[in-house]
Image (cartoon, rainbow over all chains, first blue to last red; front, side, top):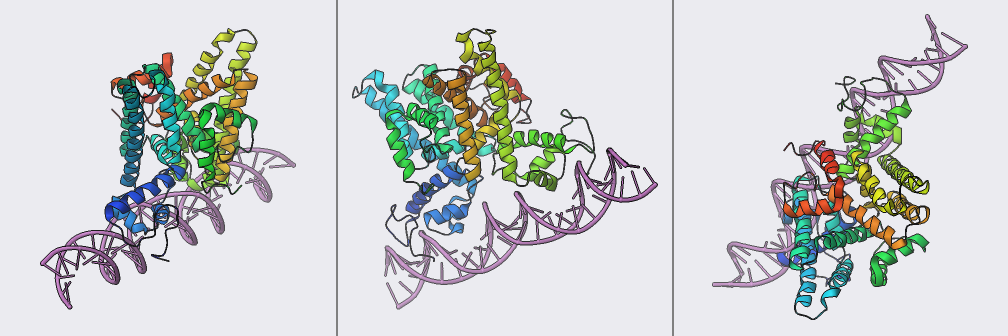
Length: 216
Length: 216
DNA sequence: TGGGTTAGTAATCAACTAATTACTAGAGGC
DNA sequence: GCCTCTAGTAATTAGTTGATTACTAACCCA
């Protein structure tokens, strides 16, 4: 059962040996998904290893400790989020989108990140791990980095930034609580999700249904 | 080292034996705080036992499993939140507070719950544990219960409820990430927290400083 | 006052988990 | 064809951790 297949055949071609840098990215991607689902303490390095199709010791040796791996996952997620936001800001600055659409576009960019499994969720798991010395410090710094990016680079009024972040945290919570996977036509849930995700609701539900959640 | 003292002398008088119901409440209170800080998977029953000043097996035996204990903690937190909200709604209905202040009063009531250690945090930890079969189900039901309470009993427009919940989730995240404990005069952090907690900021910082966080 | 009920603990266990060590095999240069 | 570096695993371990069992002591009522 060792080198046979990757358990997620949709992701990468089956290959036995792989350059370390590439393997690293592969692990980070899977770790992001698993950490995002079950949190830092709730995830084992063995689960990540299985998801990535390699052995548990290799995961540990490549990142040193589970904690360092998690921090890298957070760092990576934060980086992708920042890139996505910067791109929207650039489009506004270059006049390719009207200035008054900035907020909506940023929101769309945020919701679009749901499709990249685990990005928003692993970030959220990092936020809630604030009591941890090293994870917490990085999480706080990252959160404030986003705040400053929106306030200073995007030049959004501070209270609008707060409101935008609040909407994001609600979206994160709805995702983490598993609302898109298990709302079964509940009227209140449907309404709340429609209001929260807007026109992107089908995107969210689609991304949810692709997951190995409840077979429904 | 067995029956000597309660490690949190401020909480309860030192007593050796205690009726089960009372001990139960004591455990739930401490469990709420510990779960709120370190999450479901990150918390051991031993930590809860130590906080409550009893032995680990007794914690387990009183609640059956760690999972059942956590669900009870969530249930209790949810109950207190609902009671607090209902009280505000009642004051509005009886004319004791003007109708247009409802939102602000509800927000105040929410922030006030921070003083009851662990209530908001253990709830949030439950929300983020949505993948868990039983915890997730209870968390989703609870979240929607709050939504309906605000929309139907308080008669708040649906999108205002969404916005209110979003603000709550931002507050939760700021607390979980440990922002009040470690912002060290950071300009952005101060601004964001002032905007998020409003006039209640000192209450929050006070509640934070009482915790055994960084000895500063 | 004594016996049953209730509150609680010590000892222990089996399962799990992050990390370490020592080993194997493939790839590429020369 | 050898030799070294790189990619990767099997085996193992020390430390946790939730849960179980068996026991003890306090309380209370007849």
